[in-house]
Length: 603
Image 1 (cartoon, rainbow, N blue to C red):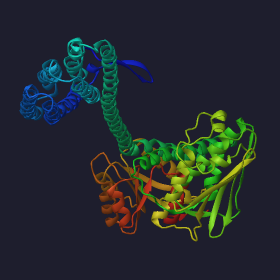
Image 2: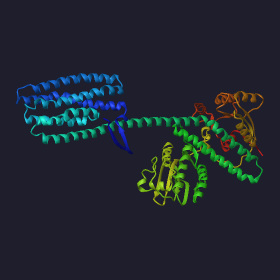
Image 3: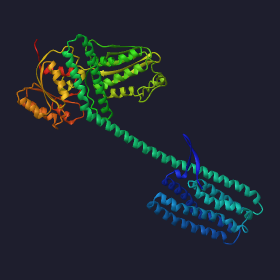
Image 4: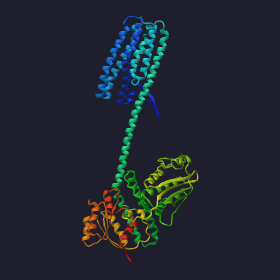
């Protein structure tokens, strides 16, 4: 018969036995056979009771023969079990179902027939009490098998038909004087046992289906997880590999804009050029953050705690969000100390953390003000963001820094967020050995803050110079004097280098390879500063080229320039004391370095 039932999982759906895999159906068959053989193995012991009871009444050997036959049946079942186990190890699930399901059904039918046959054998010699006792025993055996043979319903049906149904049909002969009362009750009992077996069957099929569905979901999750990890790895690998080429045009654009500003004589263009310069600077910073955060996602970031100019960082972030605040009719203000404030932090993580706090304040403040400010807290500097927004409910305060947490009021105000901003702040703070927290009054506003160790002195070592945020914006570029050799294979970048350094008064030569750089020197150019790109199309090592040239001119200053971060060559260069600068290099930073290495031109 076909085993069908409805299984509610989201919506009603019909699941058949064939919807389960062959291995699942083989498991159900094994469960049913386990109960069947248990019943057969127990029957010799049960039959001894009936032999003893019947022997007290009659002296014939009918029940004894019946008991002996069951002993033989138990032995045969044991031999069948051995064959079944051998096939289980060797054959597939499909083969087991095709071959062994009919065999097990036949065993169930013979077992039912063996139980039923006793009553006709003793119908004229046994007492009514003996017949009732056996019928009750048979009913108990049927009830037990209705549960445990039900995994494969067809096996139980074979047993039920030949044991109980045949017994019911023979009741007028076995219970000649009482069958009118016993038979209807027995019919109802048989129907009840079938329905009970059907319910049990549904349970077992559901269990196997859920296990297989769980395995499929787990496998799909594993595949999706592997695919996501592969995609993330590919993305991060692409950004790492393409970082050099992506940063090249950003650096060239910054250098060219600074060169144009230096050459501009039209006062009307000064404001526009300054705005363009600031826009490019902000775009460069966001571009750097994108590439740096991709490395953080990949777990490949090297947290570098160095002095960071907090004043400059806050001004930059406020400038980014000022237009959005105006559009939201919010008053965005900053309050900085007059003296320069430096904290020990990772510049990328600190910038991202403050940016997230600003996003949070703007998103949940419908009217009023937002203030970003610094203040002293013991040996630390605190940067805080105050707002007059909705605040944080008391019940939500313990979860506010948890990933993906957003309270119900937040969803009504703005559905764009995902509840990750503050979680990133908390994670970044731990990386920087900083503390974080907030105070809030529901309906009146919040104050979120980060506390970072104060930098007692500014680090101007070569490693410190590599941090963009250490240099103040230079308003007046005094003319320099000296010579600079650039080794870079990108002609557009070389043009930008020459244009910018010429505007500062620095004589500049560019070469695309180490061999051509050496030819420039042999032609009579004597560089005081040498900047060498790490990745050259000639296949040369930029670090090897720089070391060779500095060996020829030991009095010259030199630095590596790269768009990559996770490079053993760069780590080797830094470990040997060489300055490593990362693209895109801001003109302010470049000028600060050159002003230390070259002489200012006397007017």
